[in-house]
Image (cartoon, rainbow, N blue to C red; front, side, top):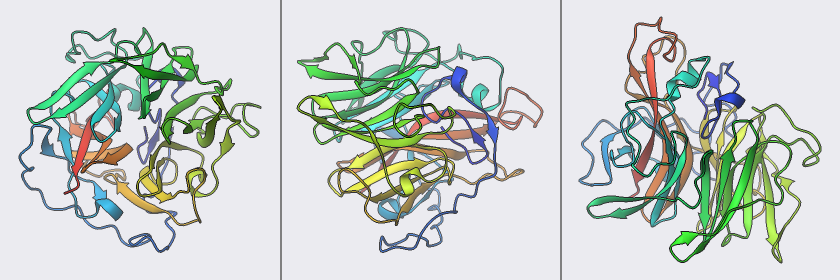
Length: 374
């Protein structure tokens, strides 16, 4: 995940591979004028606080987020406690239009961004009863009128961290994060009511792969990797992530190629998602702005050089009051009247000197957020 001033694991974990780098990044840099409506324009202010529409899927409004493009004028809300379990870390949201896939752990997120020397697991986090361990497990949630029906995807989960997933057709891709800092993409197919035994992506490199985005009925993939050019020739720094494309031809995955243009500007680009209906690629522009952007996409490469910043979290220069604000947003997907993304809420818990809190002052919890589109 990414904050405007601290760079660390941009997805789900692992502290053994995280680098904590202080930077100063403007959330508005890099936007280019284009024909995509609000590109390059002044971001619209968040709507005033209001009560959420009646729903059993979500609760209070998420404050501090600026929306543009297809989300302009909309409001975000935190998912209900069935998913946003108190004191737990919810991550890797992926919405298919019918099911919401996500991962959850009791790892204390604040400790990672506060440069804590050790991983801390929060005993107050009550994980589901069938959770394998205190690490990340993958879950599927069905949206019902009464709320969320949540199921552990036990055939995918092991004694390692599993997260960063994407579902297309009957296929799922996800990342296994080993404590050795060896991250690998895994693939499985739906067989009846469960998933087949997972197999490693044949193009996993000797570097770190993460956040696979499957689309075109599971035959195409965009993923992030620390590999240098050419692919699998050498490894970049663990914070240097770029987006790569591969496709399955007659059952074999092609040699990954680097995406062109803005999706790989800067040194760290993550969390791709393909809107197949509208023809857009979304991604988290990590070192550019810590925000979610999109570009027109032809299925293999982006079209042109114009992008649109869709989600900008609360900007946080030193001294800014962050209490109650969402200060990170990423892992975007939308379909069937809703958009989902991961969001990090800052809550004041100290006076500025507590080494276990972000900036010595804030507890930061990663949750799931939803945007009703109509």
